[in-house]
Image (cartoon, rainbow, N blue to C red; front, top):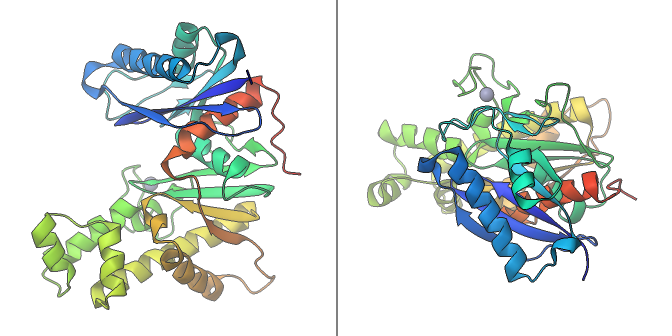
Length: 327
Ligand SMILES: [Zn+2]
């Protein structure tokens, strides 16, 4: 049977598992809930159980498994394979997650930031395929990001590189959970867009979204885009502001990194061209005129499976000799 790497995407609510062949064909992704209440040992046991379940279900021989790759929220010490902290699960401080999982599975293991892993998957087999320098921005609860250059994930000196969500795009602006003000994440994640639109509605501003809020108790980014498409003025305004700020963030990113492609992922990217077109418009209006801006904007293609697939891709690169340099 063909060799595989196992990929694990460890998140605050679910843990996802996938097996990736040497030709980078991903298998089906399975999922288990994260036992948040039960502490670190239960989390490790659940990760190991899910991996073993996948191995059995797919009838993978142990000798054919090259390595296991884990993607995790940060902050991480990637070289040492340590999860430094995880605010929503107490007791996860300074946890040697890579070696704990690797030893229990008797496999070589890697640990990577989850947003970097997802970006690596898009780079290998998704919307970033064929690029040499790629950035991915995941517009979900927060704004996760990953930068890939010639097949290498950019970690920086302290594993904090590529945190595009915390570029300050509005000095003195909205307070971010990170301690800064005016971070891109505060203006362009799906959850923050919905949160700040809700504040407008709570002030009593006229909008068809008032009915949605009254009916469902909350609104999401899809509701806002639906209202915008139906001609709602408030929805159009907040959507356009979000796209404007995203364009500013992308322009700043280009001046630092000059990628050939920026891939947009996460909940907000489900809007497809409804997101891309206004971002491109602001991008062209706000960008410099010194040179033609050649970077392309694209929507991610792998969806929520990207994290597990990318974690396996990292394992292939570290232990399987995968040359991820674009041809
Ligand atoms: Zn921030």
